[in-house]
Length: 386
Ligand code: LLP
Image (tube, rainbow, N blue to C red; front, side):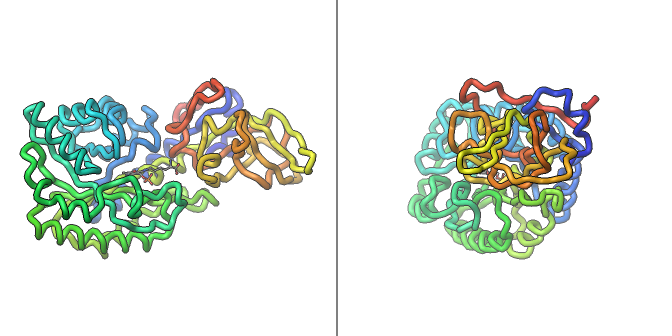
C-alpha cells in the first residue's frame, strides 16, 4: 500500500482525504488494455465508480470508453474529452432532459431499460429529427453470487427489461422509426469473485442473441457489463484484478460470431488505487469493554461499510508501537451504523495516528455525502506529492 511507504509525507494534508496511487491506476489500465486487445474487446469505464477529474484524464489516455448512469455523468464524460461514440448510457429512470441530451450528443448507445423508455426515446428522437442508436438492456436472471445489495440481474430486479417482455413486444421494438437497435446490454452485478458466474452469463447471452436475431434483430455489439471483483481482504495480494481470467472465460463461452463485445468496469479499474486516509481523534472503551477508535472520517466519506456491511482492510500507518490491540473503528457521523469495522487488529493506536482504509477508490468519493454538513473530502495524488 502506497500510504504505508509515504506516511510521513501524508502528515501535511488535512484529513480525511482520498489518496490515489496514479502509478497503480496506470498499471491497472495497462493490464486491462493489454488483455482486452487479445480478443478485440472494447472496455468502458463505469464513471459512477469515481468521477474524479484527474483519474478520468488518466483513464482517457488509455483509450477506454465510458459507461454512465445519468445525464450529469454523461456531461462529465463529454467534458472530460471522451468521444461520445465511446459512451453508453444505462439507467432505469432517465428523465426526458437526460434522454434529449444523450440523443443530441449522438452517443454510442442509450441502453434502454423498459418498453416505455424505448417509446419515449423514439418520440424524443423524432422531435429532434434524429435516429438514435440504442441497446436493449435485458435482465438475464442470473445469480451473481455477490452481496445481495449489489446484484442487478435477477428476475425481480428493477434493472433491465425482462426477456419475456422483449419477446412480447419484439414487433413494436423493431418498428420504432427513430431508433436503431444496435446492441444488447446486460450487467449482472458487482464485486463478483466467483468467475464461473460469468460462464452462466455467456450461456444466457448466446441463447438470447440467437433467439432475438431469429426474430429479425441485428446487434452490432453485445455489452456484458462490469462486475469483476477486487480483493478487499488482502489488497496487497492482488493490486490488479484478474482481467485475463474473465476475458478468457468470456472468450471460451460466448459464441456470438463477429459481434463486438464490450465491458463496463468500474470497481476493478479504480478500487485498489484509492485509500481513505483518516486521523484518530479519540480512543475510548465502552461499558461492555469494546475499545473504540474514533476517526475523523465517517460514512459521509465512505458509506460502503454502513450501507452494505462491506469490508475494507484498515491499517495504522504511523504507529510504531510493538504491541497490537483489537479495536472497533467508528466515524464521526450521528448514526449508529457509522462503523468502519469491528475487532480490527491494529498496532497500538493513539490520538493523531493516521489510519488507511484500503481499496476505497471505487464507490468511495462518488458516494460521499454532506450529512451533518461534513465537508467533502479532498484528494491527494501520488504523482503530485511534494
Ligand atoms: N455497468 C452497469 C450498468 C452498472 O450498473 C455498474 C455498476 C457497472 C457497469 C460497474 O460495475 P463494477 O465493474 O463496478 O462492478 N456502490 C456499490 C456498487 C454499485 C454498482 C452499481 N452498478 C458498491 O459500493 O459496492
